[in-house]
Length: 246
Image (cartoon, rainbow, N blue to C red; front, side, top):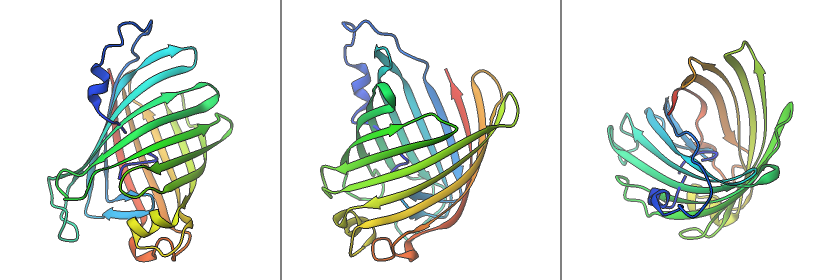
């Protein structure tokens, strides 16, 4: 299930009539990410290679420091994995609507769909907070309101260092916490609590006003084998992305 995190309950929502709202839409963006593996909340879902896309359809301003945002995210498997995933198939499609609020807060709704894997769709509500500092903290809480009815939460720190006017070095560290039902449903865990961690380093380059390039190297593992067995984790991963705004 898709990313730190992380996508909406119907892109059709974007076509609803907001004509009565005195607002304007921000620019949209599309990114393509290629990686040796797909890791979701510490779990290795496919280490045979993946291509992931993310489409932000622009935001609708609801006033100062508040906006309504829409995102579509998908995962295509580039190699067969575990007899269940096949090269060229879209195994996941996530749809998200979120509301950005003042002071770094955000709330939203995510739908997870699995077109080729046969898994049941599910839905989450989430709330998050972040603060832009030299070392930027963030926290997020996700609650599955459909198939699992339990929570997953993250605490993270991020740091960005300008290498030049167009390039930056980006570092981050994250720890995940899961409820017992979440751990049991997704990783066969027998207890909740600390779940997984992830540390990564990336380089970003703004090639033009509308095109960006980036690469990342990271490491993820379990924080508690009773919640997330080590056999389900990946260890090192790497990837590269192309982003275009329009």
